[in-house]
Length: 178
Length: 136
Image: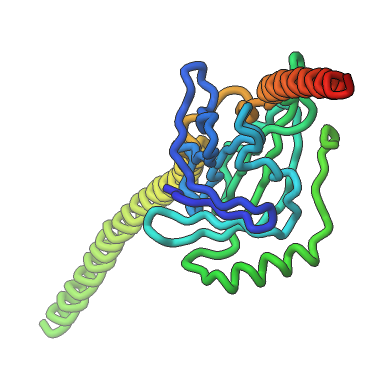
């Protein structure tokens, strides 16, 4: 199980809690609290195992302001995501695509479907608010692939993160993305 | 006398030869019959040959039957165990919009501003009255 998630490019460094299913069959989300955290969907593989590991976080947490994934949509291809596991090892992922999709057209197969390598999905909300402004219309989904397994040093992480930040300009856009 | 003996001997030899030839012929005839018997086995091998053909066709048919079973195994492998055995329904609701919070904060700010304005206005009135009192 992952215990911590780091995304240097967007300033994320958060503990990871375990999430299951809500009574209505949807995925649970982290509680709306001041100290917002990310959550790992417990029926998905742990980061580093073959399959799509799914981690969710809020974009905003109501009266508490920004959520832990507030700037997730700013991620770009090639940027790094580090998931530290409870056994002390760290799985390092590289962003493949960042998609913003309407919740009504949530790509269940692309997110939860089988894959032939260790991958990571980061999910939050995005897009304009709907109705009374209480809900977001879209989901922002980051698709990433395992690039390295094992422990890392802070210096290496910082240099590689800055290198990615300086060189990556491409970004995958969906038709629904703004 | 000699003639008689010689003629008898010649006759006997002739008789022996004569009897020997038919005996040979008879003996030969049974031999060919075994030959015909060998013909009989020849059909037998020919029968066994088809029998061999049948098995050869059977194995050739067997692989196809094995193939479907492999296919069945492959089709059984198609529903590979899902890496996410419990797939959630719908889209995750990962955004508690801060609108209500903002409106609440705005209300608090408006109330505080009004209070400050009232206090400030009251202080101004007091100051003006004091100045007027001092002037008088």
